[in-house]
Image (cartoon, rainbow, N blue to C red):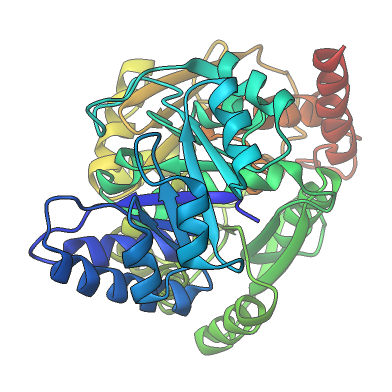
Length: 477
């Protein structure tokens, strides 16, 4: 069965393609297609064997472009044929019954012919404009939908597919996404591949998406690990945890903090990741420099997208991140941060920029991005007027505004908001969609807060989740 992320690679004399391919496989690619017409057959054979070794390491399939003889010679998993290449019958005779044969198509008629000829899967494209194949003809989503209705074979969509366009391609009927530029040209192909791979979680049954939260315990239940796990579970994900500190706290404030040893935090992380795995790692209160270092190391080693909520100060004013830890967060954790979610005081402390306007919010977000964060969500709850959050996703700025809710019951909003984003990402939502949906969640949770305790009360996670479910039902109708 061909499904999931499918990466097409060309060789280069310096061998960088192997490094990129390894990163893409670490990010979750299921199929690698080797395509290199400019290299000699001897060099192609050497390239293919190197790629096959990588694919075996990661449990992925290797397909050879156009050349059944080379596929047979290196014992690859199959071959991918164009319309002008050898017929399926000839390729089958060489490869035998146990290997895969795919065929590129542009029309329903070509797809039906490939199915009749005995192909194992069908590629359809180019779906969007692309520059990586000179003879590519854009066929669009409509053709993909027609092919999906006409044939029963697995479909791989190819051509110009970017992260934010990919959900529409999957909804049109693709089982796999063949991607080239969006991975090869990314500064971090491992995380770019992970973004695509997570999109396939959309088709799983709940609990859908594994989220590992690394944070402190809140004995009052409104923030920290407790708020994270409530949010993850209510939104249909599977929550796991690594506790960084125990706190004694209620709605009036924090009266005591008992941090975990950093090596025990690292042990929790490795124990979970080595068995259960993880789609998104989310951090909250990390407390010490040693814990920050341990978490950064685990994120890098496992190639995980990390949603980092830089929890620094409790609602009541208690410091939750030591000053030395702030410095380590900047130097060691930010470079491995997929999404940074600071409020304005946290953004000011990290960026050194005073923030009183949306323009200054954007400037701080861009500064934090240059410091290493791949994406930045700057939460504007501390500004006057509407509650405006700015998401800097790559080089694109998204603005999310909502009416300000007059309440003191906001304990755990940052934890819950970032956990909702992490869960939605793990379930296959692209980043801008995940943030938009999570903001709907947290707004409803604040608006319906149960008014518990005598200080800053907790938000209503249950009503936040119901608001998302109701909105989803309305959209589907």
